[in-house]
Amino acid sequence: MVQCVGPWDEDPAKIFYCSRICCSVAVKNAIRIKEINPEASVTILYKDMRTYGFKEAFYTQAREKGVLFVRFDEKKNLLSCSPMGNCLSK
Image 1: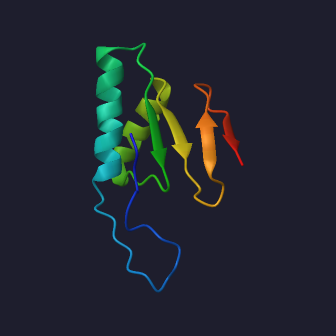
Image 2: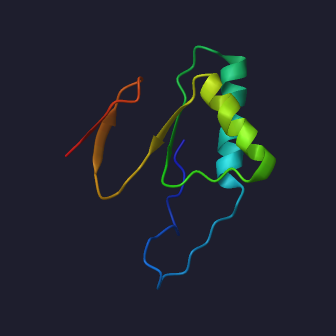
């Protein structure tokens, strides 16, 4: 799953918009996938994970079930990530 592909930018002159739902839905979907198939490989690629309030527990639950969260830094240009979370960059 890929998150934060659009309006997120560090430039304060640009308008920032976060729907406040995408991350939580992605995490809940990842949990559901792992419940259906515990052996499934689930990775969430994100710039800034935002699971507001009580939804932070979903993030913790997903990590406990083996969901891999990989923070994307567009300045690093990631090439690939292993299932263990080791990422290679340029």
